[in-house]
Image 1 (tube, rainbow, N blue to C red):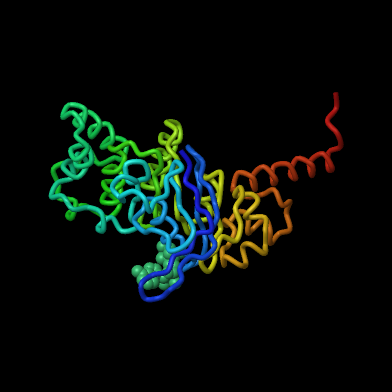
Image 2: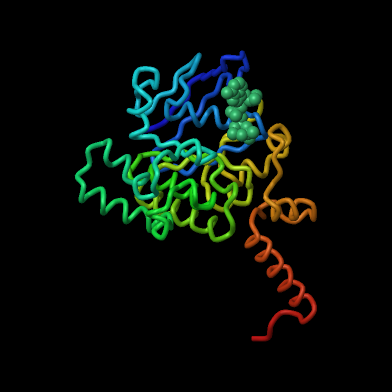
Length: 280
Ligand SMILES: Nc1ncnc2c1ncn2[C@@H]1O[C@H](COP(=O)(O)OP(=O)(O)OP(=O)(O)O)[C@@H](O)[C@H]1O
Ligand SMILES: [Mg+2]
């Protein structure tokens, strides 16, 4: 079960060439962040993954099947796409109906739907809003309802377009807990993200895009070490890595924990220098 892009091009109806010559592969259970400046083609690539868009050239395959040969609804069973704006996705009058919808259209057993909805509602933190109209709850809750509505269908891949936008710190922590649970159960996660600290701390692979093409793929450490990739994608390192870079600290510093370790190490070297080696 792999998502594969082979020489993929996509042109919108008005003639905008949003993607050209895009190649990459997303393995089952992977945790991938797509980064790049506005208009780089991230959302277009994400929509091609679950067949919301079909390529004009090249091939997108999910589990070996070209997305042009199956319906979007069929692909969505395997690859779920969470819209950047939950209002583009939510359409039921109650949160609990929204969560149950996928189970109902797929003919899940009612007791199974009830149990799954209860488990997912707790995971995404919307239990106290079950009877509310999704339109009446705060944006962060709407985002979690939209996510939960897809998780009920147990997709093999979850594609999220800017999930951290509009979330406060507890919301961000909850998102990380949800991603960790999904990873533990083998679900692949692809996230478009402008928050490089979130990318550094929560993903194992990065696809860096610019102007409709993939500039580089690699681990966050590889991508955030490469000045030319960052310049081409107009992306800044996470703050901790940027600070370490400006202070000319060792290049292995990417997170605040790395900064702390480096400062502790240099402080202890400094103490040894002042006091001499410890007596035995
Ligand atoms: N519906 C559309 N019709 C025409 N052009 C579009 C459409 N949607 C996107 N584009 C164009 O396609 C290119 C890629 O857009 P896309 O939305 O995929 O970028 P993105 O990397 O997701 O950007 P952002 O970070 O702003 O969300 C841009 O030039 C954009 O203006
Ligand atoms: Mg986008």
